[in-house]
Amino acid sequence: MKLIVAIVQDEDAGRLVSALMDKGFGVTKLATTGGFLRAGNTTLISGVEDDKLDEALSIIEKICKSREQITASTTPMSGGAGGVYVPYPIRVTVGGATVFVLEVSQFLKV
Ligand code: 2BA
Image 1: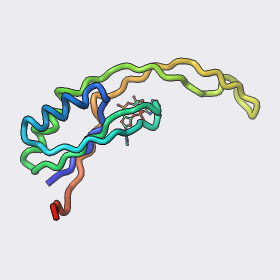
Image 2 (image 1 turned 180 degrees about the vertical axis):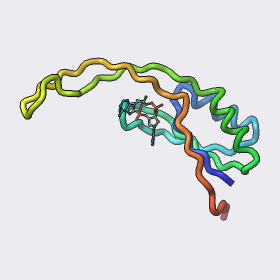
Image 3 (image 1 turned 90 degrees about the vertical axis):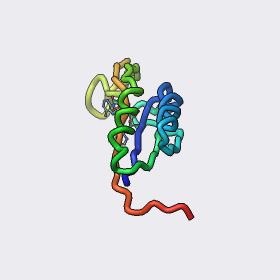
């Protein structure tokens, strides 16, 4: 068995949970925050049998879109201890999904 940990954008999370559940996957949805943008995202965890892993990953890939977001850079405009911090907008591409697949050593419901 594998544990999928998928960090997705909030906009995709509802549809992704529905699509996974429609295909019989168990899902837990967590409200999370990305370290770089400091903005909300969603982390889904799903325990899947080995022979179902590819199906789950392809559902995630199909639903999660990449999007551009604008954030403020806090890089100093001039160096040294007295550097001036002038925030300026930078564009980052977020997603589709950041996915970790972990081996499950035990799956218990007690
Ligand atoms: P955030 O950390 O808020 O990052 C949002 C997006 O900002 C990233 O999209 C990436 O395009 C950009 N980004 C992140 N760190 C950067 C940096 N140091 N310099 C320039 N741009 C940077 P994604 O790569 O699609 O990541 C989306 C979210 O997935 C991340 O939100 C974070 O919550 C999670 N994530 C990504 N890589 C991870 C990792 N190795 N471990 C744990 N979580 C991760």
